[in-house]
Length: 556
Ligand code: DGJ
Image (cartoon, rainbow, N blue to C red; front, side, top):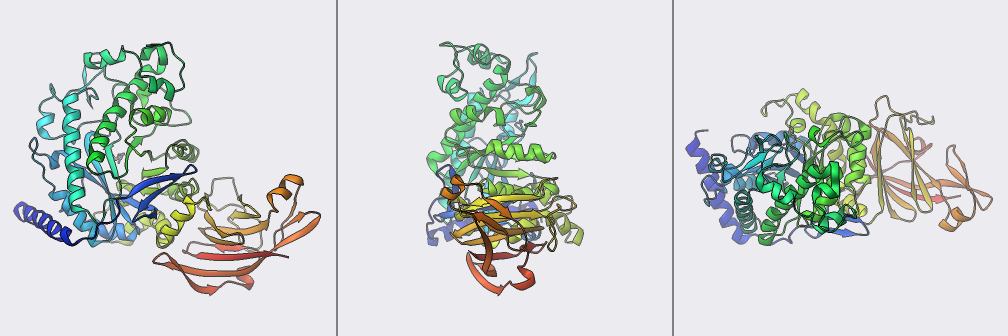
């Protein structure tokens, strides 16, 4: 498609967008809410679970995005994460071109998905590669980090105030445009920068930076890190070996926080920063990973230095399951909602259920995994097979995502994923324990699946009614007694066909009153058929097909 017609299309999109906006009903602005340490992303005033996929870095162009929909639809996403490029958006200082933003909005609306724009600006993977040309050409004004040997490195300096002011202006312009053209709230959340921080130097050693490094640590940082240092303690005095990294985290966080604040002042959408992770189990020195980003060890510095950010999010590509799960735990904090803007490696797809189990608000395999190495026009089986591990989750949870998000926010939902060597899980729900077994066929014990692919979700609808679903697992229930009974006695348990417990000296057995298979249509459970007999004896088994059951229990 020749350039002139591409621009004509994008401009046409802008025009259409503007005229249509006049008639569009204003939807409530999405927001992140918190209750009892649990979080929900409210979209149209109700909890919403982000089932996203991220495009590749260079896909946010009219010549590419339209080609991605077959894969994104196969993935059953309800949200697409896609970059907005500063260098394209502000080709000359103060001149803003929103044609690509408008193209993204019109494409997303055509495919009825929400959008999370990724503001590729001062930082993209620690470098300034998406800064406008006129900034890249003026490194005196828009300075880079300087390393210990005085050499300039391929990372922007968080002390370059000209860069900060320019980024704040451009981001505020973007948010202003979204406010103007997106009354229907296609955009539900915004990522500010991408994996900010620095490679090649743990901090900026420039004179501008050194002045701050030699100055007292701001008290809010000492408090955040629970360091009881002498008054006016410098970074070196307060943090010793960690001083360089913590200083860089403070500087980068302060910068990103100010950019976010400038955007929020115009249009207060939920905003987050994403982190290139270190290995949480064996991190090594800061020179071996990206320094200054919201890595697990400096989350509290980021929380203190960038309060305008709603959450800090791990790009979780860990291949060691223990490290993957450790990072989920580290980012799941009372002051931080868990959201995975990027993840990869098909064997990690099952951990979507772990994220749900930790009250996560969303999940997103990233470009390399969703666009994979296939040409966008390749609709071969191999192409979709590569997407299947991710698509399988969303195919199941997509139709019921509102219900899952609501039940999770209300603390009524638990979800688990199989880990090698762990064949069963017990999930306490008051007077009932849900029993999950992996690789359990027929009446036999759970022996684990050949490869750990099992996942289960159990949500309590009322005292004796549950919503359950999952893959490659068996779910059953055992009476658990009241809290008082559990406190006052040792409750013996019995396996067998109907799991039982000896409570107050009497054996109490689980019975299924009803097991209804159903589907969700527009968020409502639609009854399909009853399970009974062989399908309920010895527990409820889930294979590879998307199945949702509503289970009513009683005892005898
Ligand atoms: C993490 C970055 O955030 C992504 O944009 C991409 O560069 C991946 N790393 C690697 O593909």
